[in-house]
Length: 122
Image (cartoon, rainbow, N blue to C red; front, side):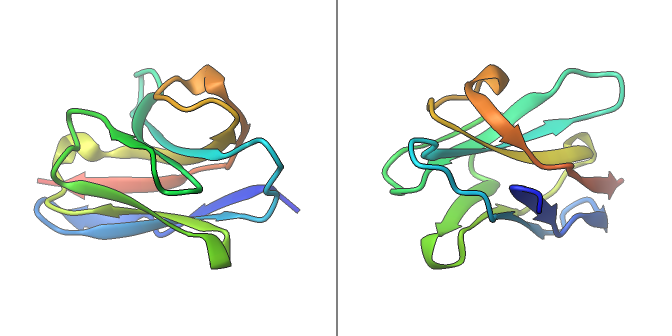
């Protein structure tokens, strides 16, 4: 069983909304942070949003602040990424990851999902 599984991606038009889900079936003590990252073709993976399971700490990339919201449901071991007002530049593969350090740095995260594709047409 994979520790993290993303779902909810798809093809949408600019201005539409999507909600991505990350089911964390392999929650590990000490790995208290979940991050959403994305990677566009030919580009490096970048952080989108990060949250702690306590919900106290969260951070967003400047490019998505005000449009995206990261949410967690501890009872369902699921972290969501609500994406509104989508733009073509939001296109990419979206990954969730869990780790023991908080922050928008990919190396902070130990376990990764396989990703879900989001495509925003203009």
